[in-house]
Length: 318
Image 1 (cartoon, rainbow, N blue to C red):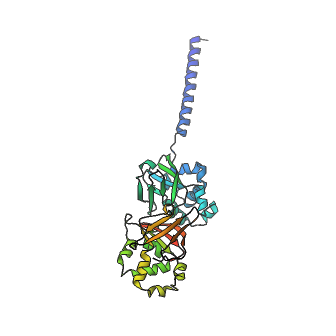
Image 2: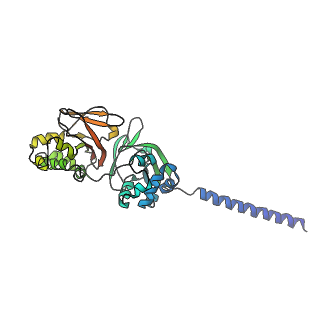
Image 3: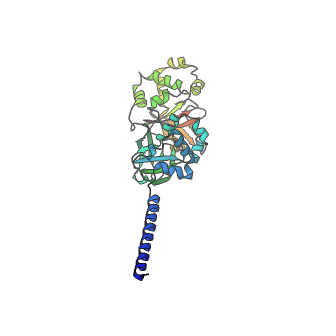
């Protein structure tokens, strides 16, 4: 046997073996380096098991693979707190409802925590709603009533920020939000009643601007009835000025979600008149000047494109 040939063959074999190993490693490296999208991250992250079920049920996985997106992702605890504690609870809603819910949590564009401007910022969502992102001076960030608890989870098509609440999608302007709520028919009638005598309030509730915003403490129907308005006819025959003052007393300038309400006083659109807020870990109450007891917020943080509604169980008296 020619030793040179034998050595050459060995060299060739070694080279071939090295090439095979190199190609194999390159293949593995390519596999490991495959960019993961928002959808991919949700599929593998244990804190998002309920979000994963919602994405699958609503069939929005492909949407979340699109380019340049930011997802505010409710973790499992957030879903549980909202009453959607199991995949079965999620699928009890219609697919369209879950889709609208999820797309309200998504923004077009890649938004890291550091690029969010300080203060309150209105943002358009993929679901064509408006949400309010609030960056505080201490660095904490909220979207509506939810706090960002893990920021800047980087993925191939944007960012994921984990949040501690499931957001309620906005359904339009404040006026529309009030009119479409089945528990606010008396308030709807009252707004209509004063519309001609006080067009400013009506314009405030129905404006399209996300900068001229207000917060409405909205008495439910039972609250109006307890205050002496036995039926809608009583609203329609009420003194217009008295009714106007009453409604203005329920409106506060700016967007204030429940997590921003603090114990103290807050000015209303009824000039010179304030409400007294008492905020604890479990409950928020609002007391009017002439109320003997405080009203309780029964449903908080209903967003609109131009503000937010908190439903309360008493009519506030200035």
